[in-house]
Image (cartoon, rainbow, N blue to C red):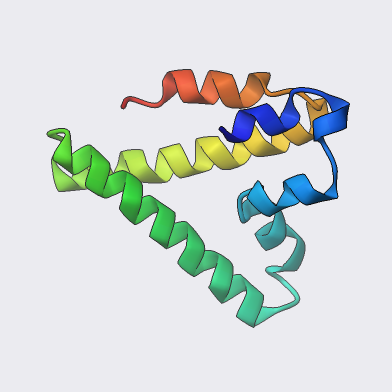
Length: 101
């Protein structure tokens, strides 16, 4: 679980960034590197499609699943940013508790 990366300072190191979502990379490079921006966009769309399929298989209509998938993606990205700045898994655990599935 990604939240465990932020549990303590010993587990928080340069290798943990291999599991950090694309939002931080996109924020850093979107205005300066179009190829990187496009790659991040594709990654976001890929993850949203996974969430959307899961929501639809759980009975959500496509339009509602699309909206929720975008919200889930944004919640996870925000949770990662908060977890990094707070050096705590709590923000991600709270996000996880709010995701409808």
